[in-house]
Length: 151
Picture 1 (cartoon, one colour):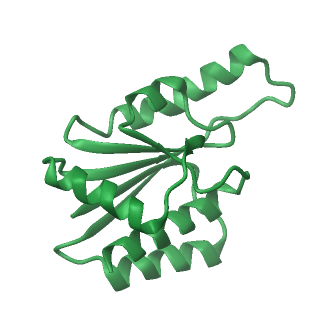
Picture 2: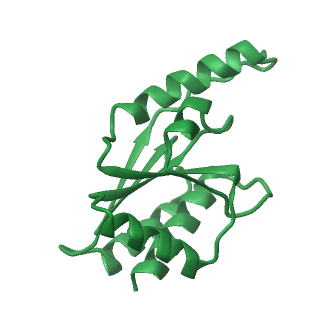
C-alpha cells in the first residue's frame, strides 16, 4: 500500500524530522510505502487581503495538482473535515484500496490552509481536531496515524 503526504513547507525542527524519518524506516518497506513531498510556502504579507489569501492558496495548490492523478484517493486535512477514530480511518483507507486506488494521498496546506479547489477535488476532508496545530506537528501526527493503521 502506498501513502503519500503532500505538504507546504519544510520540517525545520530536528525532533519532528527525526520522528518522521523513524516512522518511515521502521514501518515502511516494499509492501507499504510512505512518500512525503514538501513544497515551498508562499510569503504572506503582514496585512494580507482576502484576494491575496486566495492567490497564495491557489499558487501553493498548483504544486499539489501537478502531483496526483485520479488513481490517488485524496484526503484533505482541514478543520472543517470529518473527525474519525483510527479504526474508522483504517476502514476508509481499506475501502479506497479495495476500490482500486493506487495510493492514499494526504494534503497538508500552509499557514492559510488549502484552496477551495483542492478541498473540492479531495475524496474526503479529514480533521484531527477543531483546534489549530503547527503544520510540522500535524505532519508527525499524520505519520503516526498512518503507522497505527498499517501495523
